[in-house]
Image (cartoon, rainbow, N blue to C red; front, side):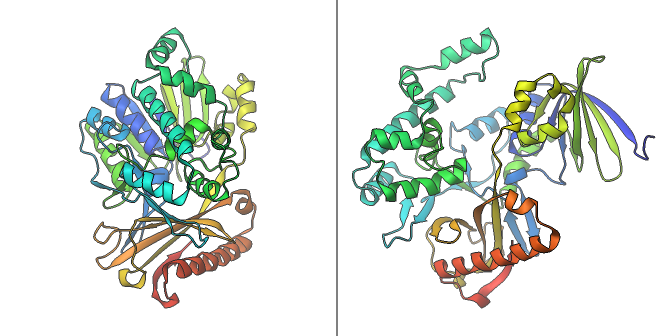
Length: 430
């Protein structure tokens, strides 16, 4: 007994901190390979930003509302094949999203079929074909490299040999753009003054990199801008986003992984006497200690400043990198439900539209019968980006008042965009 807390100590080969998709996948693969794994999660369920919560008869996806990599040969497909488990039931999104710039022009449909998407972007952005062709070249080059299984970052000669084996000639060309941004690609293609194209790219890139064309890396941006097209594509999960986590948890149960919910890690040190990691965690009533040969930490890296204090004293350069990370961006999310007939006819599960006051809104609407709402009703989730520091420092009263203010603003934008009558809402919260 210490400070009225019961100390429990356990040892495994690997401890994984965080049961989001990254932590679940890491734990599942390692345990399938025969290692003993302990997975620690502070919440009472897995999923992280791809989790869900319930309100009455509705199931809401917390953050992520679409999935990539479920196609044959895609990263999730490969993982499920390796784990020998069934992937969650899903349908391809076509279009992946409809983007309304609210500039008087027809909304942009991001089609799944390549020929349809090429025709759409030629109609929407005349003269932009060179930019998209360059993105396609980089996109294909990136995927060939990734599918050759390089090991990164390189820490030893074996890693380096795997990296070299993965390279193909086009990587040497695209490698010249390693320090470039998406805006640099636009300049190369003489499109740096195409305001409408830049406006569209900014909206899309904000979803995937939380940055605009000026700050998104060219190699990354080229890939995510074309994730919605064949042979890849974006997917809508039946039931909810939680089904992805549930599939991975099934593998963990098969291999006997100890999943621990409701414990928050508050310190990580290296035990020089035992030559292993010591992970300290606590629940509402007890405290716990875990020991492992290796540690996988999937929480935001800024958290390491609090949890990894002692080891960071010997790694000052890494500590400086953590301290110099930019302030994290956040999302303000509106969760709602209404009857299907009370929203104008829609032709996509996902919409993105410009708002003069809020910047842009990304909207996800459930499918009739997909388990998120009763038949005849839909859930509607809308998110806007916000600076986290605008919220973290508020006292409770100002925080609540600010939420009420934004609830009204987002409600107004949605009612205007989708022709929703104010009395039609069955549920709303922010």
